[in-house]
Length: 265
Ligand SMILES: O=C(O)C(=O)CO
Image 1: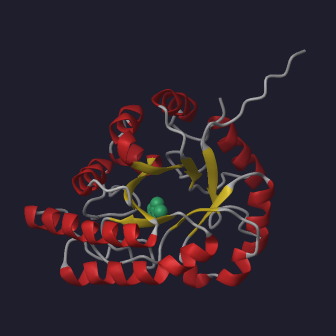
Image 2 (image 1 turned 90 degrees about the horizontal axis):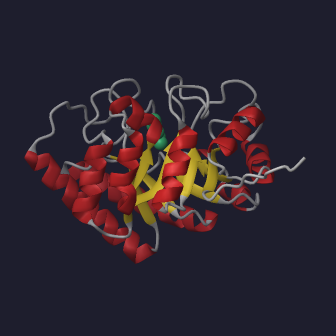
């Protein structure tokens, strides 16, 4: 009998805040690394950075500490301030991407600015703020990635939440130090039509994140046909990172192996 081994053309990463949660973070990172994945971490102030820098884990992105908002002056200053504080930490962890949201999120993941109406002035200010962020990224050699969210389930009343909004903002800035974090879980809830969305977003993608809908569990547990998306991304020539930002539906190792299977060809 011939066994055909499937491999992934993508770099696979796993959010270390959502898997192996019974373990201390250093043990989680060890297991994620042993299984061959890179890791995403959230707010770095909650971690012992010196210890995790020595853990042997390879990091894909960091999310959560860079807060502030895009569309007003005070929020933009806060965004730049928190980004500047995060850059040395990213360097220590050799982490290439810092995640941003279209509006700041508070500790509960809810938007700091709640607005269902995004005015023309807000768009212009957001582009201006993102240009300042792109300047900083260029000076410091890091890439900022702007993530789409969904305003229907997880982040109500979030301005610039849709993937279409984040694509428009990143395209308007048009700099290599500002890319998209295209989150397909959020996009499925907000917009759907995922393969076409990947095609439109392709020139701007810095990273893709995945989970299934409903439930935000691992690929293969819901309505999204991730193997079809993996094939389409491969055909489009995407070779970047796919990060699983999902809660395991049961056993953690099984969740990671389902994720790897979905993105292996
Ligand atoms: O807050 C969320 O829902 C995220 O996807 C963060 O990356």
